[in-house]
Length: 245
Length: 315
Image (cartoon, rainbow over all chains, first blue to last red; front, side, top):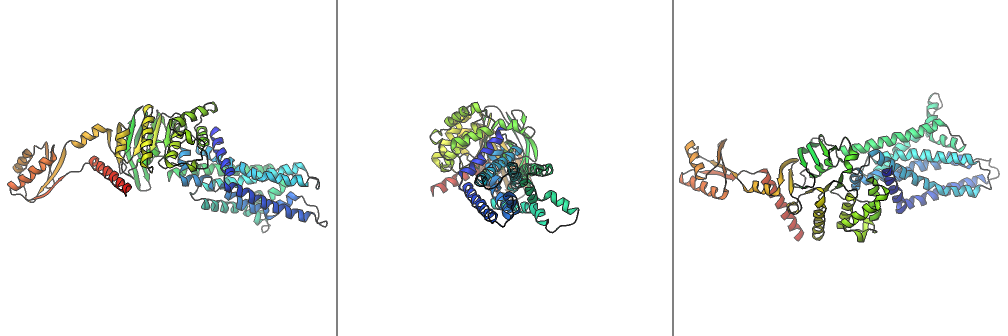
């Protein structure tokens, strides 16, 4: 446990003391700020029907664009940088296991991801007198944001064990994330059963819409948690393979 | 304390280390000597459990490193050849993180860090960011990190490579100090470094162990007997060969494909005698050379390498 905390703290710290970390925070705030502004401008139109702003956000391109482009950037340096500088040799010759190293790095980047989303709570406080919020919905929406984010971060963690080159690691993560988002894009095309049911299990974006409506479906929890476990396990095995090459 | 048994490591078709075995007792300071590319780093990586061997075993304090890596790694302090720290951290923070990774209890961390800082003489940079340190200081910080958990075995891979002469002297002094109460393995391609620090030496070349022993033993082995290879154009009779061997006081004579091999004690004198013998008997001498021993060969290469590097430094 202590070893996981050691890796986690170092990861989180690196984000918070590096210009890159703050660059990501600023870019993210600009991006969500823009989304917020857009949503408000639609909502204040008196002719518009009332829409839950979180549902609105989940249905828009904002979230999947973020998943596709931001999570690979967050995870790309996790292991590829260590492999490139050679510090991985120091890390893995301490009594830490590959699994602990992977979990530590993953939790570190996940915490930074959560830090990234924290300022968005401000938007809710800005709106709370104007719109009648259901706090349960908001909580479940944030749960969805964290679960789905964690899933994509685990994909990126795996991708960063595959190469010494950060840019290539980001590309791998991007491609895998794209494949995982594909079912969401296919929902518009596929109409027949049983394909439609299968896709509904994998459709990340409609899952987030469910979360925004306050629905926490255990099938979704199983999907994301097992997905995270799978990618972290694969990352640990891949790290062991690094030693064989 | 440390036992390596028939370690072999292949990278694809290339065999980097082939069937190397040795054992090191508690408190010994052992130098692993070999030219660049001999397989030193690969061997050390297998000792530390970073690299799984293709075959063979490593036991540290009687714990197999591949069966029980966690426990075995607790006994080792390893300084890799390429010292890569986390440059954005401060020295003290880095050591704190390493202490945590080593599983040192919270109550003891401060004490362990302070003693490592003291031992490696880095008190004056403890609050500095690692990126801003000189190479010599980075080496000391890395060395301090390997000492934190009080390992029984210290493994240092080429600890003086890339340092300037002043730093090299300081680091060597530090290593000598550290070896006083620890089992220590030091890999290097620099002969004087071994002479200065180590009592025992293991020589590796082309992935194989060539010799092992104290430096005195090896030196004796080198200065001792030598085999001379002699070849005449004419076919020589057995009595002539006997006569020749008596002339040079050869300890042993054997024939090999038309060449005569003579085991002699004083090489230079023997050469002279052989030449005069050939003239007297009216024989044409085609070859007169000393058989290269791999150990000597490697010493020659190690010393020439050192000289080349010194010359480069001068320029």
